[in-house]
Image (tube, rainbow, N blue to C red; front, side, top):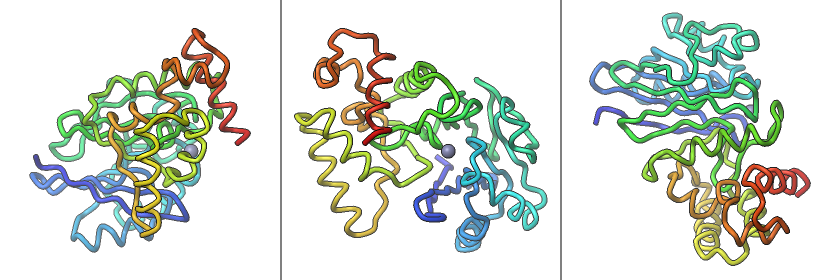
Length: 256
Ligand SMILES: [Zn+2]
């Protein structure tokens, strides 16, 4: 295995991440909420930025790119072809099934419309790591701004099919607040209860709660569990289609 990942905090609750390939020395950052922390993280490790992987067009994910490019003019920016108009500095436009390369590492692109139309996830299949941006959070999911709710459900269902051991990196540290909502939807889930306790301890020490794993999310994240009878019953939708239950759970979170 030649991949290492370093995650760091930006702004108030955004995460940036560096992906380093020790075989070639290539290093990518995933999203750029701020150039400063990204440059600092690179300098600390003595890594040279070769690539920038963008998940979606929101300012808190791309606003640091111009400053970072000024410092690392050879770095190539990868991002969603479908949102090229809103991410003006892309060098590589990628779509569903395309590969993004970081030296010898390879990420498969998964299109996950919902939070934004063009949102993509980078899945480093061989290394079992996925950068999910604002589509999937630990114990939660992104707000659905740009598609019908059912489209977001399809996107999450695609991610839910990733192998359970896949490490899930998220765009934000939202886990504790997500847990407070999740427990209202599934109060009797022992895995969720244990997780909420673990999260409280981590946050009390100001430690990150991500990455998580797909297996952990499938066991506790209400947005991935809308086919569970207990969740369907909790929202008064026993036997309803998963997309409809997802829509109801998401609407409740929006009001929470
Ligand atoms: Zn966003």
